[in-house]
Amino acid sequence: MQGSLKAYMVVACFLFGLGLVPASAGAEPFKCDTCHRSLIRGTFAHKPVADGNCLKCHQQLSDNHPLGKGSMGFIVPKAQLCAVCHGGLLKKPNVHKPVASGECYACHLPHSSDNKALLKDPAPKLCFGCHPKERFTGSHTHAPVADGDCLACHDPHQSDGKSLLRKPGSQLCFECHDAKIGAGRSVHDPVAKGDCVGCHAPHGSAYPKILKADFPKELYRSFSIDAFPLCFSCHDSELVAAATTEKTTKFRNGDRNLHAVHVNKSVKGRSCKICHNPHASVQDRLINPKAPGFGTWGIPIRFDATPTGGGCSVGCHKTFRYDRVKAVAQ
Image (tube, rainbow, N blue to C red; front, side):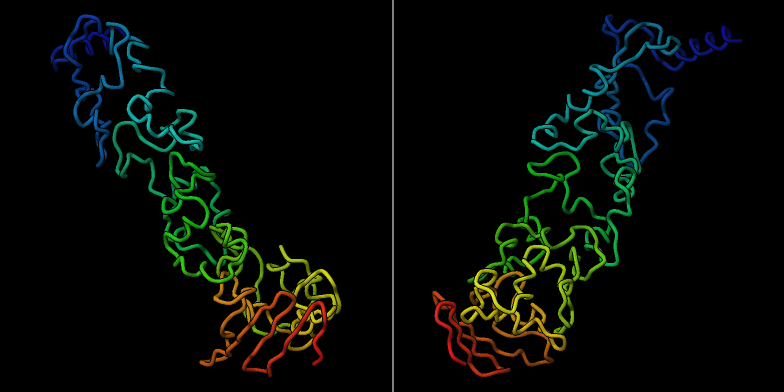
């Protein structure tokens, strides 16, 4: 039976014009689609396949194709094959692991596909084949993630920076978000350093605005050490907890901690966002020019800094001044 099958295949190959001759004989390329039609059924075909130039990637190793095992191979080792044409995708310092190891076929089909770029599946289904989906979801999800557009932020092959990001730090964020939120007379240190992910989870979070921890939505909150977990992930809680201090804050009158005066209250403790903008402000110390959240009226705040203190003229109280060296009598 096996001998009859081989004889049939040999006859078929000659009938359909598939010349079985040694690769060294300078023969015309095989008519591969005589036997391998199923390889080009996809909507999108690899260019060498579409051009019928299969020997761009494959080579005949012996003259007994298609009967002999190992009679066909690649022009170079398989892990190096794609780089023959696509070597430009291996130039940058950070390379996607499958690309670096020559396993391009982990994401791409080599002959044809129903997906653009010969992908095995469209994003994000393809991405979630390796990257666990649950790591990129939450009650609040970054819009590109929700849209399944991983490639809005990440390059699938290589990058100059970590995590295959298309641009570093806030440069990437400001591709979509208005860069004006990070400009002003005073700029929050993470924003100034381009470290948006210091406060925001880039994929998804349990907290609004994809924050990494809770930042109160309400304007007033009873104070406790865990009342402002996002802020206290960087700032010392003594900034607010200590009634008197000579070092934890510059917002003090003598040694009286004026942060504590505003925030450290069992009732109606002020939230950080009443006075401070988390990104940048036209005033020193990230002080908002208007306090948000009071209906249509933004309470005006005029803050004047001095070398050893400052003063606030606010719509909710009279002007107060303070000095760290020589306390101002109130």
